[in-house]
Amino acid sequence: MKSLGEFIHGLDLKYGLYSSAGTKTCQGLPGGLDHEIIDAMDYASWEVDYLKYDNCFNQGRSSHERYTAMSDALLKSGRPIFYSVCNWGNEEIGSWGNTIANSWRTTQDIEIYHTVHNQWQQIKSNFIQNQLSSKYASKGHWNDPDMLQIGNELLNLEEEQTHFALWAYAKAPLIIGCDLEKISDDSLAILKNAELIAINQDNLGYQAECVVGCDFDQPTSVFKQTILTSENVYIAVLVVNWDDENNQSYDLNLIDQKIALTAGDNCSVTYSWTGETADVKGSAVISLTDIKPHGNQSLRIKCLPF
Image (cartoon, rainbow, N blue to C red):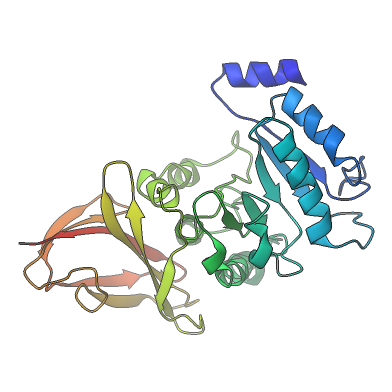
């Protein structure tokens, strides 16, 4: 394994391994329960960068006990290994996952079937469940609503774009869950969207705040967050159309949403999906029209005093 790790690192890539906090993995292979120290030392000697730790065959023992044991072992191994806890969102993981792990699953697995209803509803359901733990996310510790389904040809273009935007604003780990040899150009372009990746990877690490439609039973929801990069500070805004059939519109008032401080502010706007830019005053109301069913608009806005 060490030779494999050296080969992968030689390609300027990182690599991860999978195990389970149980006697077996979900595939029936040996798990890590009760021999965390020797496993962690092996991972370190193999120069592993990432560990996903699942929840199968857990013998009915508490998640906190089992996952803390591996956390402690990894810390003692001498190598920084990204620790991804996957207890399927059980036992109020959000309230303690940030004390032992870099990311923790807040939901059950995304299970997308070849039916119109389940494809989108699974994405929406996992996002909403994940949003309940938003207060626990911060730099180095993130909620995980499960891997991306972009490129699996089960969502339409608007749904794939919204799926990626929601995960980006949630600061969720952007784990690709498709066969990259078969991915379409449109799906690959979504995964490579630099604007949304920058939002996901900002230096603050806080999850976006819902400011409109936060019970998620309305056609439109709006999310907002401050983004800090090595070069810039700005506000990111995401408008999502949850409606199954109808286009939606939303008027973004920069003053009302506390994006601009005064009507005279000079504001620059960048649209995440098109790259188009515009200059407006702080008094502006930006009209976002014809957002398609399950579609979205994402904007980067920076306002400076006049």
